[in-house]
Amino acid sequence: MKTLLTCLLVMVLSAQLFAQTKYAILPKPTRLEEKSGSFMVPAKLAIAVPAGNDNVRQIAQLLADQLAKSSGNTPTITTGKASKGISFVLEKAGSLGAEGYKLMVSPKNITIAAEQPQGFFYGVQSLMQLMPSAVFSPTKVAGVTWSVPACVIDDRPRYSYRGSMLDAGRNFMPVPFIKKYIDLLALHKMNTFHWHLTEDQGWRIEIKKYPKLTQIGSIRPKSMIGKYSDNAYDGKPYGGFYTQDEVRDVVKYAQSRYVTVVPEIEMPGHSVAVLAAYPEFGSNPDKILQVSSKWGVHDEVLFPREETFTFLQDVLTEVMDLFPSQYIHIGGDECPKTQWKQSRFCQDLMKKEGLKDEHELQSYFIRRIDKFITSKGRRMVGWDEILEGGLSPNATVMSWRGVNGGVAAARQNHDVIMTPNTYCYLDYYQADAKTQPIAIGGFLPLEKVYSFNPSVTDSLTADQSKHVLGVQANIWTEYMPTTQYVEYMTFPRLIAIAETAWTPSDGKNFDDFKQRLEAHKKRLNYLNVNYFGSPINNTFQYQWPKAVAGK
Ligand code: ACM
Image 1 (cartoon, helix red, strand yellow):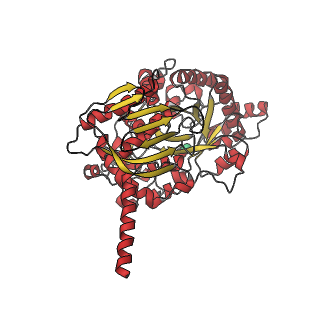
Image 2 (cartoon, helix red, strand yellow):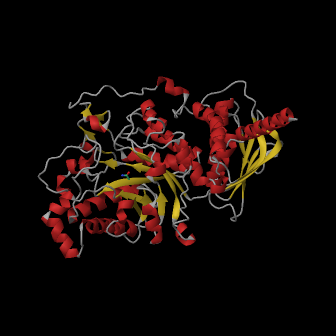
Image 3 (cartoon, helix red, strand yellow):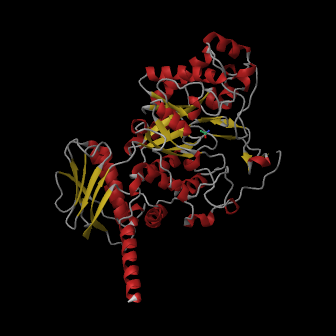
């Protein structure tokens, strides 16, 4: 009897495991009903789209192109309904919302229904994750049975903001990698790419009116190697920036994947690269500065002079021309007040404006920028330091020093994006530091990242909770000199954050996530992603070159 029960238990458990890998969609859909049978993808597959809807046709084309590459058979795109193929069906505005979709797979056909193109795009992401992992291959894979398990999926996101920040300031990230990164966000139904474009260690975006920002500000004389405490440098100049044409190309590419690109232009801190190019916007116009080679926080900051505001408005005008995003990120974090405290000009301005301390002076700075951005019909977002000294009227807050900044902002009825370092900083170690390449510190294994619940319902009322727009993963790149490093630190932890952002909290389960992730890794292998634990790691250089101290 006991043996029989054990056998039954094993059968039930393995059936569950099989189901989870058969329906291994990440992030997990809101509702998935398994059905029996499978749709066999025919060699001559028809994909039908609604007539006259170019956006939906383009999404169908992305699916057709990928199937053509990986299976060797090119689907045809038609209009109307495909009785034996895949049909994209437009729903009337109702319950699905802008990003929701329904996916119905039967042995006879497949239907994706949505109200908006974005919903179809997400329906396609789920459909591809029901297909054999080979569908993600860039080249034809032989010997695959192209079947799709039958099911009914009804899906929409928990949060409207699902993002990732990538720091291109500390280490420059080439455009092809930015596109790959955007693809990987889209694959996991993330809809925002926050592009961190300026730093003490490098200004990375061409601004026509201020050419020295890139001529001087994009190049640092050397870079730190090894741990921060080693204080060691490689002695080699390092640079890179995006031309405006490249930025436009990236923004367009992201649009076709339903990813909004939010630019970040840091102020008033993290601005040494600006001051190396234009010292007149800092403490002393005659001070000669170099773009910083050292990581960390620097005392040299922008000064709240009229000339500085004119400069920043000019820069933001060019930035807003390039980025159609509603949000414009202005940084606002880690601005030491040392220089402002010592400056006659700043102290006089504080008196004149009735500002009681330097935090209020920072608020004055940010409020002026907020007013400018708002006057252009956009919305300003900044790191949670913008709360100190008073929040400017239209600001959205990115809560990074834990969730408290987010809670404080939501209580003031301001919108919030949760990106606490306690869960969302993917530059922290993901395993025992002794076994890992050098990282900034911290410890955030996958399970901890997965456990985050952004809604903090114990601290907020239901109405205040509505201000929590979503979640973001942050990838700061001081200790990631190559794109392979970035992938290693980002994946699979970013997928855990994607699931937190998309899946209702009662649908989340770490064991179930891990099982789906095992199936998903085969897809990531086809996509050549160097995730933590991937086969590519075999050739991965864990240790930095030996540092030459003081070089
Ligand atoms: C931050 O990590 N300084 C926003």
